[in-house]
Image (cartoon, rainbow, N blue to C red; front, side, top):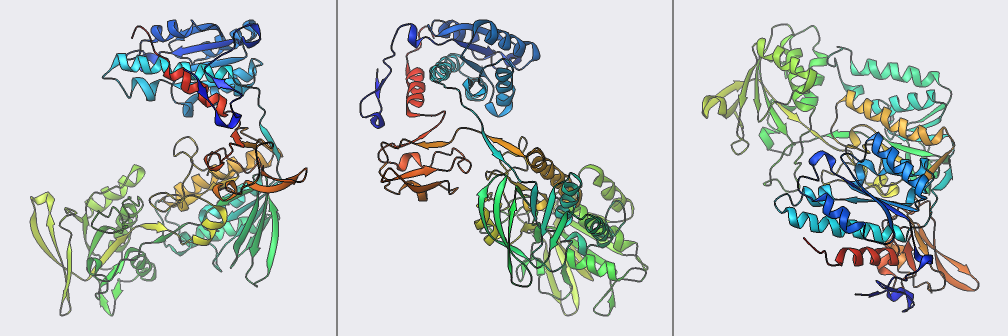
Length: 598
């Protein structure tokens, strides 16, 4: 079967490969057992015997673990001794070991982008463990496709971009302040922009924090002292970003400062540390609006003011408190556009607040009404302390939520306790504390300026939770703290240090290498219809004039290789390096070819 590409106006027919010495490539193919993860379901020897028949394949090997040092050394030896001009590794997902094998190819003298990885674990053995024959047949097809692409690879070079040694940090809460200090200590010039007139964010409003016992305001004050000690940190409060142009290593941003004036900054990277907002219950939600019903942040402020004296609410001493958990978190489908996620920190914060309140003069009876207690890690000690000191924990079914009522001046909570087989319990209380979760900060304008994607939870999305946890799809823009997902202060600081590490790695050395898989224009085919420009979500395509003709131009440092521009081009003038029409069609032809003996 032959495939004809319309962009080539019939000049090339894929699937009809020219024979002869000029078309001969020297490709090595390596098929991994993955310790049985692949070979238990895929007949790797059958894959090998099929692939080694191809006249462009000069070496084929199966290995127990291709990612091992020994296997990598074998690949490098083959590249050098057999003068390979392409390699294919059939193993696990490229997300795990793409850089591993690219590095091995590069060390052996082969262009790293002439390496092709084929996923026969997640896409074959794990997906079709109930059908070994089908998994093997599919694996043969996938490896054939990778092989056909390898034959058409050409040496590509990373796009090297010089970077200025300056970073912009948006948000001066605990994550932003800590990031600024760390970046400054690495010799980077820091611009710290805070929308509010005061720094510190949520942590700056907190009282005693667990486990240190230090007030949040004290921690922020100490961080601010460190900021002021560093001459390479410039802080703008009451300010915000109003525009952003440029690319990784060389962004041009405009900041509107508190006076209303606008200043232009040239920076190399951006760290977003805009924090979160506490959830605000709707009127009537768990009694919200009734006298004696407060949120956890409000209760924490009451404790802070009551230090050394009994807790007083509207002139009366508070002796009994009911805490209702998961308010604004883990909401079910009955809540339109509800927050399905767990806010993680709330259980810890509520139990800690109850222990602080119980320690006030006069003591306090505490009832914790919860769905699940999630005092994870070291915070389990909080739960143990609260339980041993007399706090009562009652578990409710989310389908039968606690009801809060006010009869006269008497506040009551009714709940069915699952721990006593659904017994209905009525609790007279002086105060109801709604344990509210985190919701994303209102960053609509900033999100639009930076073009950052949001997750289903409306927090900023990282590229990969485990492998690239602070990077965004916009190269040079990193995430820090709870703007990304609910986090406590410790986790936010850890995240901010990670973001600084990633940013500094490109700023300190003065350049960054970008992937070469970007769109390019076949100038002879382009007549500038203009369809590609709005299709690009990254602003990488513009119109230029060349030899009296208007054509499209791709700014490669802005392009992410997403391919959104390709299908809108009616003349196929746009192509993607590493994924040209010819390469893609050859992959399809290789995959579609009949597999014998399976």
